[in-house]
Each structure stands twice: as C-alpha cells, then as structure tokens.
Length: 287
Image (cartoon, rainbow, N blue to C red; front, side, top):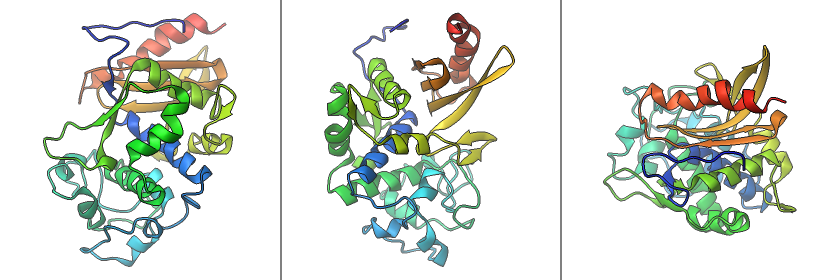
C-alpha cells in the first residue's frame, strides 16, 4: 500500500455504500457461478435459469431471446434506461414497485436484444437472481462462500437506500476501501489470490474486455474501460464505478489499483477521482 487517506470522519473499518460498483463485483460472482457449473453459458436465454417469476405483461417473442450476456452488456432490449427518467424501467421508478423482478420482466420491449446498450440496473438484478436461483443460495451466501471468504473479507453488508423491503438480489454492497482494493487486486492478478484461482483467468479477461459502448465509453461485462493519457500515450483502466464517487480503478500496464469512495451523489463532482488519478497519482508513479 502506497497511500491511504480518509476524510470527514470516515475510517478504514467503515463499510461504504458502493452503489453501482457492486455491479462489477456481481460480474465476478457470475464468473464463479460459471466456473462452478451452476450456469452453463452466458449465451443461454435467461428463462433457462430464471424460473420464477415469468413475464405476464407486454408478452413479446423477443423476450425469449434475452440472454445473460444481454444483461451483462445492458442490451436486453427492455424499456430500461436509468439515465432517462421517462423510461419505465428507470431504477428510481422501479424502486417504488412492490415486485421488482416481475415489474422488470413485464417491461415492454423497445429494441431487439443485443441491438443497443442502455444503462439498466434492473437487468443486473435479474442476472443476480439467476446466480441465486441456479446455485440455490442467496447472493449474500454465494458471495461469502465463493469470493469473500477466500479474500478475507468479513466486514461487509448488503443494503439499499429504498424505504421498502428489498429482495436479496436487489441489495447493494457496503464494503471498506481496503476490501475494495482486494477486489481490484484480484482483477489485476487475473483471478488469482494468494496462489488460489478464485475465478478463472479466462473470465477476468473476457469480462474486462470491451463488448459495447455506453455514452461513447467502452463497456465490458459490468466493467468500464476508461482511458487515461500520460505523455501523449493512452493507458486503459479496468474500472468499477458507482454514483457519488465509488471507484475501483485497475491499470494493469502500471501494476496499479486505486480505490475511491465519496458522497457526491448525482453530482459531476463524483468524477474528481479521475482528475486525481490523471494529475497526481499516475504522474507520481509513471517511472
């Protein structure tokens, strides 16, 4: 560890709401589910594993063609776009509903699956439920058994900002910065931790390689590829991002893992971490 600082009464032992950074960790969990044989292939249709609930409204033959990969790349074709308040599947609208899974499956189709990527948190919740139903374990139990235990992560909880009772698959992770760094290190070492292959190297490489674009930025399987420029050279980071300033930034070329947490929710100030990386951290270790 090179640098560690906390501000505003935050400390090393306090788990922080990761928001959508949780999505990237769920991507690791899906890779483990495939490694363990709970899930055969991400090209399988979701209805192969998601037995309950099933779509009841807006029935459309295209729904039968939605695969796990479509959920990973935010390209299910459902009317689900968190960045469009008019979208019926926008996360804040869904949070008010009684049954998130049923409501999401009942959304109308606006695209052929795979045609266009739109940022959709509910699709990731469907994917998480697939891990849960296929393994017979809640996502908390699955993560503890197959990921956190091996990494020595035990100061972690799952929760949500919604006032309503939230299903297990819909809860977000609360984790300490040091444990976030362990996740980053796992990615940096291509799934290996202390000599143990926690998740296959193949999955780490595949899940952090660009598959589509969202708002013009390369998107992988719930990971972003965000570029930095140093001395006119482009350096690619494998990055998990969360509203408010939650980041796990891995730069394999420089052997670097950087973690940020923050409270700048729904503000452009949550991008400050990238300026700190570009202007301070990376130049200080470029040699």
